[in-house]
Length: 162
Image 1: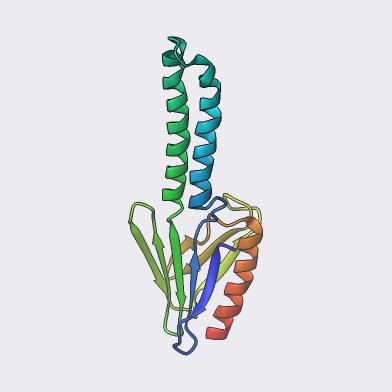
Image 2 (image 1 turned 45 degrees about the vertical axis):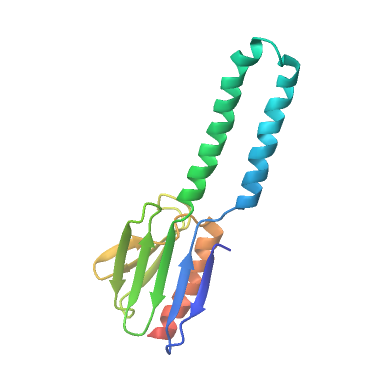
């Protein structure tokens, strides 16, 4: 599951860290690129020593480069994290974007409301936190089932804080 709870040691304080799911580890990425390049180069063996090789080779290099770029971009986008800290004094949410930009939100835990919109949001089981006059989205990259499970966990933990 692409989120984890940790107890910080301070009484009643907990930290939730969320991250996008990664189905292909870096080692798998290297293997995939190597296999793709090999499979695309095997047909070129018949063209060795001919002029046709130089006509087809640039397109194969562009294809392998395009796949590499797409995976590299996906891995960079996967560095997004959200850290939610629950304490008796306040609730803090920190969202770190892949480009390093950070967004902060905080509110009093007594007034924080966890809302799960089953069908009204932009995605099924749209999960938000509302407090201090703002409503922020949480776990946009989670599956609908994970957002529903997280909503119940958050409500339970906030109820214990109050």
